[in-house]
Length: 114
Image (cartoon, rainbow, N blue to C red; front, side, top):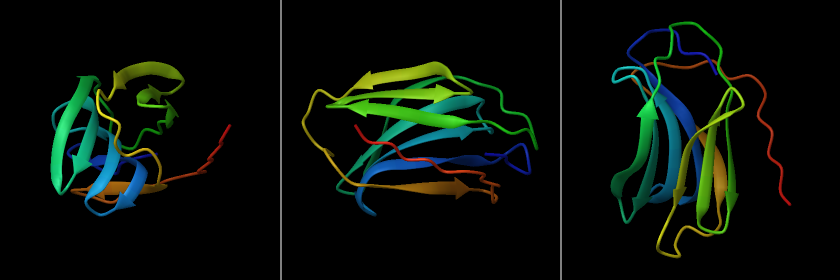
């Protein structure tokens, strides 16, 4: 994934049930963080984040692994965010890509299930 400007956000949505129920893992260039959100009944909640200074026009690989209620989020192969939802919700769904502020360039998308 590559963002064309410094104040952009880009990432993936996972376990997407509909527009009001999903997880989102993204890089937020405007506040220099990697963020994991949970959206349930329209309410978007930041559940975990870590510092990360994304650079304009540089390519990054975002991926995650989900098992049960635990989500592990990676950036360029390194574990950056790990969070376990104490509630059993968002147990299945689709994946998607999401940007705000500007478009992003996305290369290959690979989904593996076990």
